[in-house]
Length: 74
Image (cartoon, rainbow, N blue to C red; front, side, top):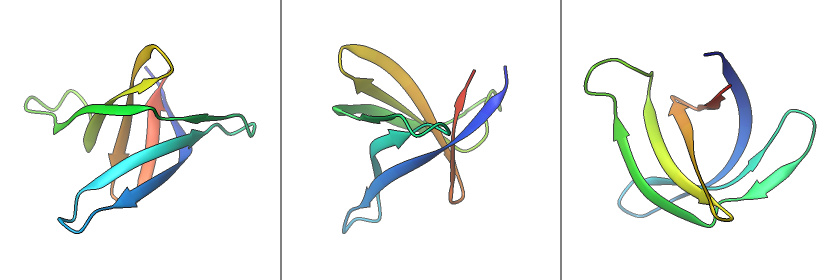
């Protein structure tokens, strides 16, 4: 799988938690993230950074954050 870097609008909460709110693809298409279900780091090194399980509409998807960069897997 290939990493595709995307722009993500996010919110930083008082607790320091970063929550993704919307994704903008490289061609300018954008989607609101309706709900964040879960976030975690990979226990076995399967992926780099933090993986967020999100709902975009009725579709469950993953978006990843490493440092200040966001990506999806294609």
